[in-house]
Image (cartoon, rainbow, N blue to C red; front, side, top):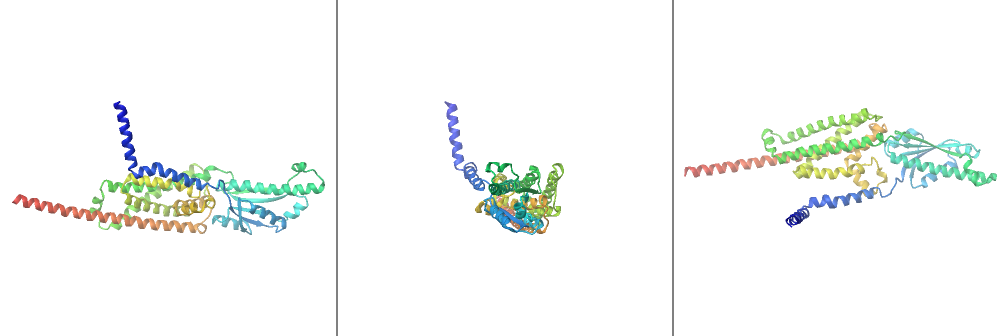
Length: 409
C-alpha cells in the first residue's frame, strides 16, 4: 500500500508541476501540434506544381504553339515567357525565375508532316531533385500524349487500325537534359543544405550558451572591472566567435568538397563572403537571445524550436514557389533560406556575384542587424552590471561605517 501511495503522490506532484510550468506545457503539447500543422500545410499541395518555365521556340509554327499551350495547361508548369538561347535561360535560372526550358527545334512541323521523327528538348535544373523529377515526368507525359494523338490521326487517315498505333515510331521524341546534377546524385542534392543547417545550429548554440554562462556564473562583474569601454568589449566577444565559427565552417565545407566529392561549379569567394555575413548575423542573434533569457537551458530550448522548421522551410528541398503564401512569407524571414539559396546557386549552379546579389544584400543586412543587437545587448548588460556593482560597494561601505560606529559606542 505504501508503494501505491508513493506512486500516486509522485504522479500527482509531477502533474501539478507540469501544469504550472507553461514552458513544459508548450514544449510537450502545443509545439508538436503547431509543427504538425505547419509541415502539413507546407506539403498541402502533395506535389510540386506551377514550376516556372520558359520556352525557346525555334519553329514558330502552329504545332509548336499548340505544344507550348499544352505544356502551360498542365498544373505542373507555369510558362512565363520565351528566351532566345540557353544562356538566357541559365541567367534566369540563377535568378530563380525559371527552372525548365522547353526547346522546340526549327522545322518541327515540317518534319512531323513529312513523317519524320522530331525531337523536343527539355532542359531542367537538376540541382533540386524534387523539381527535376516532377518536371521530367510531366514533360514526358505531355509530349507522349501529343505524339500519340498525331499518330492516331495519321493512322486513321491511312486506314490503319488504332491498336497498331503503339507499334509505330512516335513522331515527337522527348529529349531531356539535366543541368548541374545529371546523375541524380543524392549527396550533391542534399549534403550542402544539411551542412548549412548544422552551421546555423552550432553557431547559435555555442554563442548563446557561452553568453548565458556569463550570467549564470556571474562573471560579468569580473569582466566589467577589467574593461573601460563596454562597446569595445562587446565587439571583442563577437569577433572571437565569428573568427572561430568561420574557421569551423571552412573545415566543415572541406568535407563535402574533399571526402564526398561534391563538385564546386561557382566562385568560392561568393560562398566565403556570404558565409561570413551569415555567421556574423548568427553570433549577434545568439547573444541577443541569451541576453533576453539569461539561462542556458531556456536559450537552448528556444534555439532548438527555431532550428527544427528552418531547414524544411528554407526551400532547399521543397521549393518556395510550391509553398502556400503564408508559409512562403515565413520562409523568407529565415536567414537560412537566403544562405542556402546562395550555397546552391554558387556551388551547384555556378552563379557568380551578380546573380546572387539580392541574397548577398539580404545577408549583409542580417549581419548588420545582428551586430547592432549584440552590441546593444552586451553594452546594456555590462552597464547594468557596473551599476549593480557600484551600489553593492556603497551598501557595503555604509554597513561597515555603521558597524564601526557601533563598535566605538
